[in-house]
Image: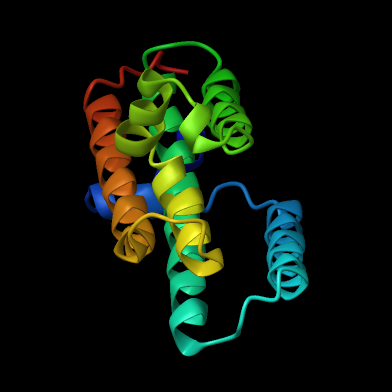
Length: 175
């Protein structure tokens, strides 16, 4: 978290401070990764002969927006945690790589503890597996695919609470 960017600015509320911190670092490669990921999803759906429908397109958009909100929540949560610990990048690595590796395991073969962790704490399965299974037709109820956007939003809200707790307990060194 780059608190030093905020020095000298008048405090106008936690939301303004949140936006300033969120916009403090911009990486173009993150947009490139999202573009490549979208291209691969569209290519895979074409190769699997999934029929295009507005239903599938809307569910895919909800899943992508839910993923965007969840990963924004990862960075927000790691910023809040970094106030109490050293090494915020380690927290980002733990959240992102653990969730990435989790999506490589078929859900039916995943231990119950991991399945619960990545469904309820960090909703990676809700954002990636449930919409994919609904669009492609893996099985399971299709309504679960629509939970991606609310799950991503809820994770971001919880992350913002962690961040607010961190900011409330922040003590400057006076530098």
